[in-house]
Length: 363
Image 1: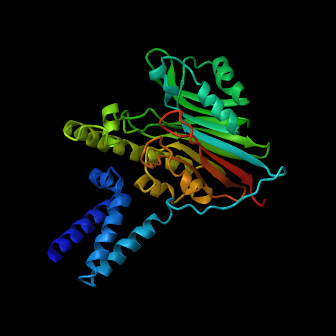
Image 2: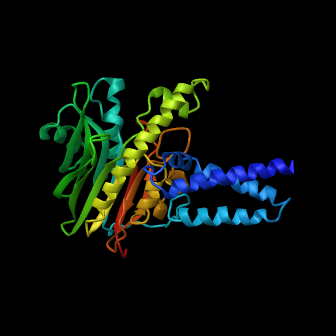
Image 3: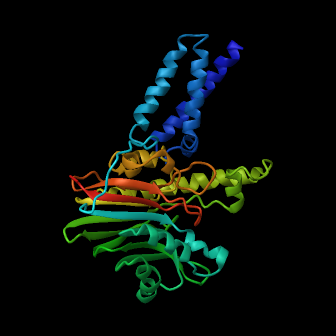
């Protein structure tokens, strides 16, 4: 029994070490490490339990327990497992603005066969954001007249940026959308470095807040995993475990798209850091909070969930598992601060909308 336990301890320590390296090294280095890093929290807990149990037989196992605990703590400390909730009481005198980010999954066009965004629009109307960032935003007509009538007017917005990047069955386009109640001074796109993967990584807009402050907003959608429905079912433990081909396809797509996403995130980060004023980077990163990409972003930007969220608002995917891939990052500044963050648990599609309210600092 003692010998078997020792073997298990070393096995889980080695597994923890590989997954730990996956947090520190980009997927372009060794993709298998990044894959193991997906399961890092689970591996971390199992390794701790193994060392703790083995310490009853060998007190030296406590050294391994400390190594695993402290190393993981210092690497994951900037991340958002346990947010530091700050209370804030709004008043009518506060200068506020709210942002919403949501991957709308082309408004479920493939299921409905038509442009029917009413459920989404109704949800946004109730939340009344000043800035709305939509990923995979489907429109059958990209003209200004159509977008104003169907998206801006129902949301009481006057300004927008829309960049289509994918034709949908000759019925319209999927694209990136930023709607705003504030004037847009400049805007642009961040395109992919290589011909593979997504054509557009993000769009951005410089907004004039209350005729005084300039804020650059990035609407982000990094490379998705592009899993089929069978592969999604496999992840949700609904498929037959004997379907080995699903697992092989899953690993192949993970390797390729993790590589693309790593390059895209690097370009996005480099571009976002060039702007000297306030910056908000939000959208669908398709990365878990403990991934290499999120750890890297946390070195330069603050995750608003960690500042003012709660564990109840961790999950951003409409799945059974508590997975988080949508984020609102901001550059630390002295003018605007996040005061409220929430995930809107509306059953619209596979992503939940996320909202953050910002207030003028010093209130």
